[in-house]
Image (cartoon, rainbow, N blue to C red):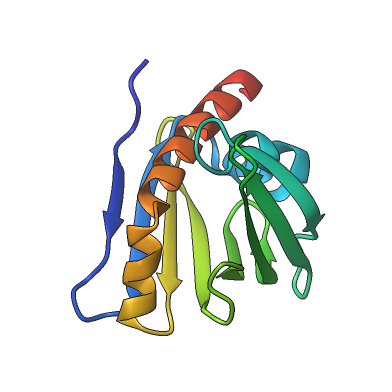
Length: 160
């Protein structure tokens, strides 16, 4: 099995992160894997982590909160508010790692239709500062995104 390439861009001097990844599944299916909390728990985060969801209400004004459990007694909690949700097309939300309270990014994920019933997922995050963006990157963001998308690949492949 070949994994589609992952691109993470953090422009120097700008508090931005862009993540681009293609999936061999239609946008509606990739979106559904972001919408359904039971599906989200099967793919979001690094390999070997369990996800415990406290809230997942994907609608404008809805909130989410979850924890990643590393199997060694450590829990990493995240929360935010959904601001926009257009099924199969876009999700806009805030994102906060509770280990860095008050450092909140604004994220937009777009689900672009590609030929061959495929999808390009583009995530853009705006951080309060370059330093807060760099701290997120330094604390394992790339691993969580890469491994989570590998699990998302398997999920949408099995569902398709």
